[in-house]
Length: 343
Image (tube, rainbow, N blue to C red):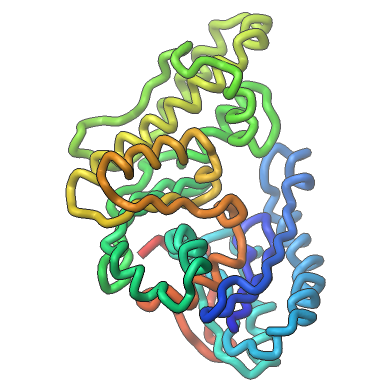
């Protein structure tokens, strides 16, 4: 049994994972309501909330029948907000020492990379290792507020970054676009909700694709284009055409993500395509990438909605599945890495 903790940003999360059965239990305390009034995450407030909520969540885990079988504690050690990571790291060290079990540091991005496979493991835990061989090499796309990455997992489970964003991440672009449109926080889900009633071709926003051979993403120009567009529109027109603006802006982000992924799919004989990260919960994006996977003749794995945002289940799963990237240590040796890359 693996006990996992996550506190990289504004979600306090705990999970219990049994590799022979699946996810035994998981809990997440969301801080969205707190940060919504500030229009974004306030690090000091996020840190305070982690301090308040880890103990109650761990207490819930301790009541689970399988807690006595915990043989490893895993925790996010980066990337993320330094103070938030430190709270989770301290809690994990205390638990590992108290339980006298090993401590594992998991890269948050690597956990996102593995999260699409959690559901597949739960279907048949005893067969997962063999089934995974059929799905590798794997092409994955992580799309969140802080990261937009194309990566690969090869037959030895080694993760390699293929492409990243040169400026804003896709989730950041959606959140900033929502702010320009006068919407709340987090902006991405609101853009999707309002855009569902609009036309995605109503406004022609730039895609920032660059040459076909270039896989890196860029979303800063899209955000600037929206700002200039809004400056030319009367407030009444913006209000009237808000669904069209949201739908068109969102489509520009999705088109860029899908086009780059399509190009990457054509470059090698991949066996599966994965989608993870907070923006992976966007229904339009999930549907578009499912189509690309079918066109390429590969299996499509999208992280379950509850595992797209920050969660401890993916930390626990990666601690077990990511045999090439987990930092295993004892006692107080584990350090937080706020700027740790996906490597």
